[in-house]
Image 1 (tube, helix red, strand yellow):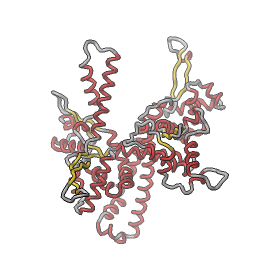
Image 2: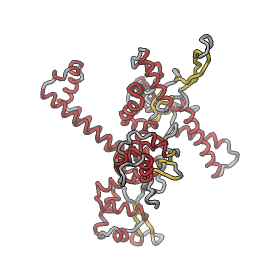
Image 3: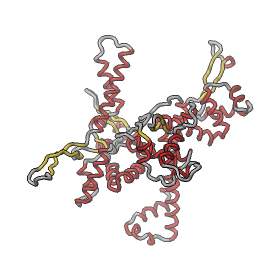
Image 4: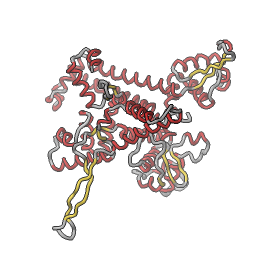
Length: 505
């Protein structure tokens, strides 16, 4: 706290109030070790999640109705709240509306869309892991070996994961419920029901909503590659294979049968129109099996075909390969960026290096059928954008450049990090552009006037010119919002879907 006061130049009371607000909104972690002052750290992921809050509210409305969307939005506005405070802020007092909101809150908590905020959740996971590792190392007698240190780290990671899983179960409690018996009205049977604990503070579980964003991206990818009917089958397969608490870290989904996929098809009227059949009347089960085989690359059992599959289909069981799909989405994004900045020749070189590994300039020129004078500047441009990297192989110990081989390859970690950094810069530029457009004197004045209650009820109180300026501003804001959502989707693919690592990339 003294350092924050000194660096910010604000009053201690102001700094303390700001810290409390940031902690309330889950933006700052705080921890206090024995004999030390309380330390603060910014939760960067929580800050970046604010760009998706609109999608979270839309998803809550689609799943749980307007009551669920209102609950999620009010919790986002206040960081974390208890159930009585939620209903009080929403001004829900009627018995029917209160019952609807209580039911929506129960579904949100039981589905892990809202999670309990505990004292442990305000500490950085990195600090907790370090503390657990120190505790495990103290149990080692004598000089620790490499194996013992590795085991201590694994035990600490397991303890951290176990505590996080247990914290997600907090928020529901069992309550005795009295019900009148069927045979005699005087006899009452005591039963237990699960209700939301009114003493627990709840916050939004962003990861649970991110699962729906991932599923939507996968379904759109299947539609783009095949057709809308294949996308419908893919959506049904995802719904059928989802477990009780799906996570972004799941490499594969649970196996289910094709009949479960058929049951969850929302629209099967024109499913057969997406494939060519000799007969007009095709059984639905046959049609779905053909789509599942298409999505599982059953016609191409080679490694290349499996790398492009959406599903695994064997033994009449269907599984969604989230890890394979995520890897392919990141690679497609990399190739799209290379196509935009360096043309088809740049994509050709990147695909060659990804498939074959390290190659020198002459080999690349020979394989991609391009002259050396064209390959050299293209490789330099790709290297400047961190899309390709070089590996030095010296012939002698003095590492003389004239006696050194320079091999080109694609460092995926470096390439993805560069793309992610550029995406963050673009998001900042979009927000700066929106802010600059809003601060124009004419637009600012009209926006302030449009917020008046009488103008909101009747827009004809504005002049014709003011309405035109307001309409132009809304169109520009819509374009910027659409652009921001597209860039944020790229960030989601590069960052959130990278939980599996690079794998075989």
